[in-house]
Length: 343
Length: 295
Image 1 (tube, rainbow over the protein chains, first blue to last red):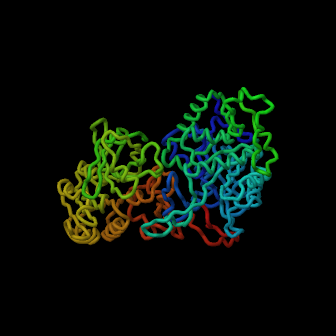
Image 2: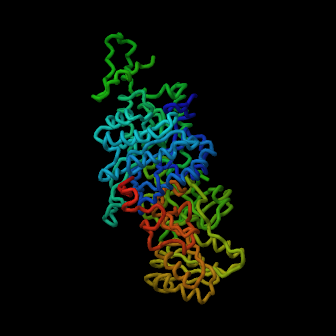
Image 3: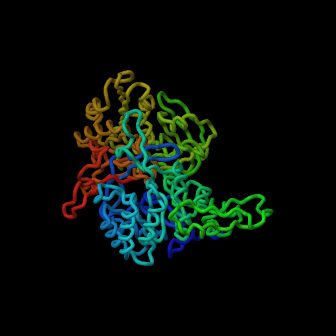
């Protein structure tokens, strides 16, 4: 079985990664498995300065998910470069550094600091950060602002280091944001970040989290993530997509691959099952083998085929239904994507 | 360190439940003060938070078993309470920083609130083996919410029980009786486990007497933790480091046993303004605001 996958110019031995902010510094997970077994280790978002994050309570359990309001705690880029990145490199992990900022300048400054550091496989731009210069509005909620931070990071990153944009689903049209980011130089997309939710503590009769609302993650959001991956792949079939959102099993990962992702990020599941990364890779491998596929790449985007009719073989070719055009009006590449069913 | 554990017994102990699991890997490596993190709800659970419990004791039977005590107060812990013999529960452990043990035989005071008492009995055994004196102070809301009062009387050189309603032992809170016990026993070190309020008062009183305190924030971890292994960053509390700098540390991976006088008890639930990485309203040098809404 060939599980290798490509993100821009980088080849990964398998498609299973951690999701940003869910794998700690790497040391915590390394108690459970060899980090080199992951396709890539995606870091917690790195900002210029150390950040303590929000006061507790930061987490509330919700059905098949978690609502969290962390406030992007992190060590800051200096400590990350001195302490975490070299350690990850020693483990043989392929490290994708999540980059965050309060302004396009901060994103650029972090990217510049990471620029020449050895051991950076790719950058992932977390555009779901508040823009301090725009009333704290999330960059990712506006295609122009998302593109601006992607452009800022791309401009300060070596050409051979792919830049991914991690998008929020909380937008009117994720394809518009995806197109803007790719136009701005993103080599790939991570879909999706958490979606905003609220939960109320019926004991205190107040919102359960200090941050009032929080980001919903876990299997609860998997269908939302799949919808986003499917829509964006239809519009941008050549852009590598990392599917993130409630991946807990190999079959979940396969769903994302079929929807058009070429890799998956495992997030909240790691809190529940810290050994999940290699397990999901194994289960995905088995699931592909059961479907008689020899390469992961054969499965990418397969869900976009027209439905297979049991009588297809009996229907004269010319009257077989046309592949359905994807509904997105901005997608001028939709036809490229509608592949013929396999014999 | 992560493995399915087979349930041996679940029994009711006053207001709490005690579960014994066959978990050789935990039993083998356990040191007093460490905890286990359990998945609840079975294989296809919709409850993703791991529940963290201090280990009460480990035994060598069935290749290695581990017992812990918990309060069934939410759906996840009620699910645990409903397990029967031979059921399987996914368990990670032993986790966290154990209680440091004194090199010399010293007089030790072990203080607990509620089910926190469960964490102290394996410690008492270890201290006994080092010829330390062991004195207990166990507190709780009422008689049913004091764990181990009888065992403490058996194991300890002395045992003082105090309940808020006076239904067992003295009436009042642990802090009321502590100065008297410290004076009476000549305690040289205090170990404690229980609610934050109890640990705060234990630390303050120990400091008044100039004796060190090692406290387990296991109950805080139970309430705030989601993974138990240091990944999720939800169980953070402000701790003063050796360099004098306050950092938000994880109760699970940096604790659960912490030096009491290093914890900023009154600032738990906040990010102290002088903590490393605390939000600052405005960086005048850069002119950019920081610390806005971010998930």
